[in-house]
Length: 443
Length: 88
Image (cartoon, rainbow over all chains, first blue to last red; front, side):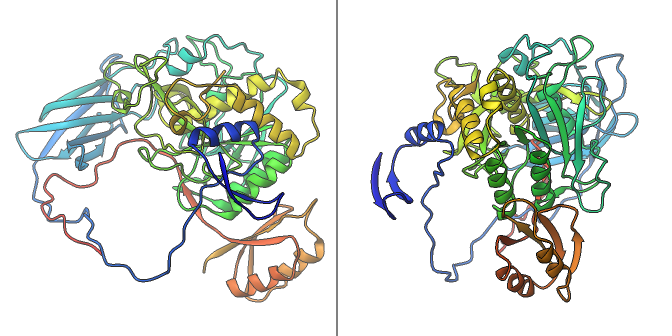
């Protein structure tokens, strides 16, 4: 590392260093803000550019009807989303949802059509399906495999044999879509921070995302009748920031949710959300949480290897990328399409998923490809940095439970810095590179 | 009208006189004040900024929205689209 300039002796410094050095420095001093140099340019008008649009002349296409059924009794699967790409690279094709008889009509042309990739996404209870290079004909039928709760998915492969007491003494807040009542989950409390909704309604808003996240952290079921998370002994809190029927969460609701998590004594705050431009309200809430002794663990985002999205990119966030592992999902599951180089030098079956964002802000990585967890009314398989983040949060809670000295520190920035440092030091590199895995997989 | 977040960043809860001053601002509607350190308001940005400038430890942010994460693949156009067009 080379110091190029300094505002004053104890002030900000301009330094030159490699991503590896930056990652090591962040791990040793997590309270230190390390931000890349940004250049600003005069606000002159730029030349217009030509962009490909989705508008165009849509030819009258014939329709192909396909059906989706479950392997269990050939039952029709309703509300499954079928996405058929005639060209995956340009994202050309058609998509639709199945009706009550499991059927959907796709406008792809008559006769038979060559399909580059076909994805079938069920709402829950089933593995999602990927078919590549197929010829699709009218009346085609696709069969989805039911989820076996004894299946060794990536989460249970990486972290097997979790005790029911793991995480005892640690409080974890999930800032998300809310958490549904579920036999595998015990919710200690929470708050709905969406303006206009009932503050005491912190159950799932119907999306299931928060319930899935919560199960990865704290589910206390036992296979084959239930699932187990990484830290079943934690006190689990739900802070719902996504309203019912709303596609997005307000930064006001998010900041209020983070504040509420701090007020409820959450040691770790899981935020499986992000995107859009950086905003100072969320940034202030994260900084205030750190000053109150809590650590915020944030998803890197799922924009196909783009830079880490905000708030994961905030210097005080612990940003998580999504790790995948070949062989921890069925051979025709959608996760097969997430495999992408580089592969780990320690074990070539490991990869950072193709959808995961990456960059120097990545602090750690966690299992996030084909994860079985709780869902309103049952169980579901989901993929994303949204799943990798609670995996890390759960492991962090399990590790933190073994450190009463850290838990008993006064709730201030020194406490959160010590917890963050402890967590970052728990990372074991897999050999994927720091911009992909940060300090590695916590254990 | 855009909505704004007023956040108190001092120690403890926000001062009652500051909260009263915000409530008294003209042309401003308080949409949520259930937090002890934040408010969501609907009002003219210039007036809000002027008020915040006179209240130590308060900051003003515009409200923004974050989408629900989703990794599911999506079709962007039909196979029949022949005009990729130009767009500025």
